[in-house]
Length: 595
Image (cartoon, rainbow, N blue to C red; front, side, top):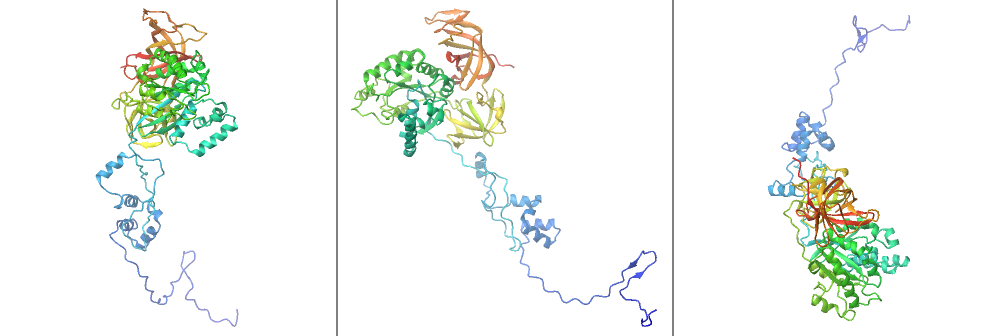
């Protein structure tokens, strides 16, 4: 024991022991000292209790004003509550009008593929909140931006396909038309002149406007169908620059199948006209194919009239016409009505946009004034403006043969409206698969329009359509759709035969060409053959060159077609084999529809 220790006394703050408690329990704390008077709370700014946003937040927090203020201060946390999203998304914003006429107009407009806009781009004044609790201004909107859709240019549209023998000057003429009509600037032309000079081909610089492929420029031969646009005060035009080489005739067929007017380019240079027109030259085949593929007019331009071997000679011009007219008549052209003849220089531009000077060609003005060449216009452009197109019926069902397709935020099909009017938002049928899709958008010459008339080259965006669902050779239709068959009765005219199979008979195999369709086919039965004198033989076993035949034809896969009598543009076809055009024909009869 410590003698200095004092007497023990229990502490007021010590724990007391309780039996079975396993320890000590805290003793009651002494009464606290009186707290100082609380500081006055900061003056709270007035809150609009009638604000629907404030009322909704107060309801969520159960009346806790402090928590409500914190929630309003954090805008992102508000959107998780449906009642808040409803107020912010469909509130009484002044920029959203309830006018019924406006609502109907908005339904007719197309929705663009742009990302959704935000309220920051179009600020919407919200009901006045308290300054201490700002209402969020940047709120994601679910609506997509609406674009203004035009009705389309009222001027008539024509597709021009430039055809003819290789090196006749098709690309040069096409390029010069674009230059003279102001679609190519001078700086670009100067650059093409330098590039052509580097290749030792100074006269090719205008062709470079159309031949953009390096291979085409190096060889001076068009391979793919070039496409360009120009306009005049009267009409709108699409140039289709077709290849002239015989190896690329299938590409030429695809271009000519879209054309309304064929421009047959003939070289007047000594030796070149004869090479192109003689047997085996492409002048004959191209003229015949153009008629088969349905061009309404054939404008025959006698090019290179400024060549030193010609020098705008009327004798040379008449010599070319003397050989061309009988041949064109044999192809089925009504020469007086459907064929126009005009002399030009594609390189210098004489008689293209401006009339040739009288001192160069004194005989031309009297010739067109007297309509001596089926042409009453002085220049090529004025002649094209004067042509009147017939057979375009907007009241018929929609028919758009698909030339190609690609994907760009959806599947887009390319084609030409052959009949009917294609409108945005309508339902269409794709043949031969018979699938239905909605037209999301329509473009003509890269400009979005609300409706496309017959004759327009269009891009059609189809909703919920994959790349495999629409392909080259399909047809976009409105009800009733076109037919898709693999057996059909046709009438053909035999123009040539391959060396290995010199007789056209049952079992003969060839490639069916119709607009952009290429399909293997064979002859199953010959019903009758008519010779050049008009004598018909029923049940003939074969047909020879120069004879007509009515036969049954079978394709390996179904092809979209209609009878020539109902829809001429879907009732024409060409048969080719071993690089030659074997026959041209029309569809006479289709098998009956299955019930």
